[in-house]
Length: 182
View 1 (cartoon, helix red, strand yellow):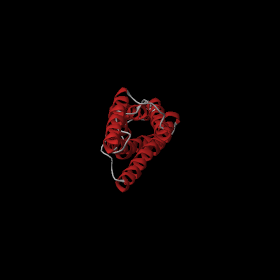
View 2 (cartoon, helix red, strand yellow):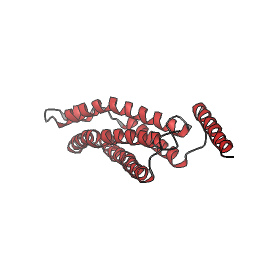
View 3 (cartoon, rainbow, N blue to C red):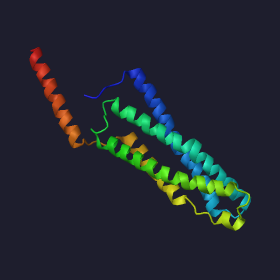
View 4 (cartoon, rainbow, N blue to C red):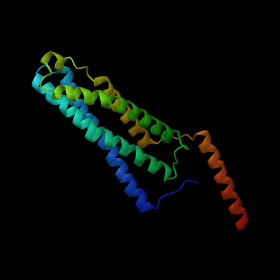
């Protein structure tokens, strides 16, 4: 049986988890707006400013919110009846989150380098406008985060093999207690 948090703690943990998870999605949407600006923009001043802002949003909002979402999600999984390995929707959400963070961390250095290049006044307009876009990663990341959100809202049924085994063990223990009480 998973360690189940007391109701007040569970609600507080859930509120924090929802805040950082939805914040992560919001930060990605804000980043995406800047990414569209650098991809479609032709004004070097605007593109330079957008790249600098993208560097700040990625390092000061997206990365911390991603880790906050992972940590609070683990707390919710391990501290509630859902467990981390019992239900497919929880396990898939966890794996998608880990994958998203892995891609995010690999892209964070690219973003930081591009932002540093844009912030350098010596970077020519030609070089500035030639910095490769991160737009495919932005859209992909948002799609993954929205998929995780849908899984966590709808909680599709389906136990993992581990979940089935644990459910049978709990039912057997419950049956033994019932028999012992008679």
